[in-house]
Image (cartoon, protein in one colour):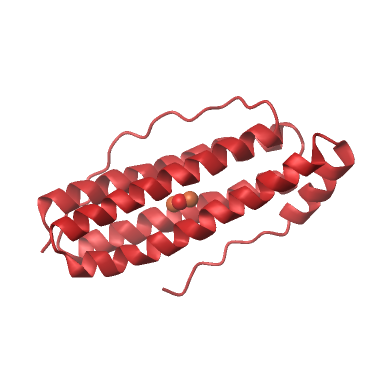
Length: 168
Ligand code: FEO
């Protein structure tokens, strides 16, 4: 069993994870359009991560006897000025998601759902990594400062990123 209040909050978070997937797919498409396929690959892997997050919540809610209710996904931005702008936005977005996960944890604590608290701990930890990943590339882009050779080197680094689903 799961409280309706917590079910609603998890459904809202599923929608945010699906929006994140959509947002990062839009960023991947932008990088494809300017020929930076390593950056595109980075975001295509991020898309898979976000799908993993939403499906993890989908499975949890079903296991708890709740009901997943899908909502409309907002339209993401489609035009970006530079790689630097994209990573500023991605970092800000991950900070927003961390805040949402913390608020979701507050609901689980409020309704005294210990299983949900344990489940959500994974997301609390995951968000530390999500923010750090975006922040570290953002810092590299600040150093590169628009230099073409630097961008190409970073593009090469990002081309090897792969999605490795966590065991649990
Ligand atoms: Fe699902 Fe990037 O947080």
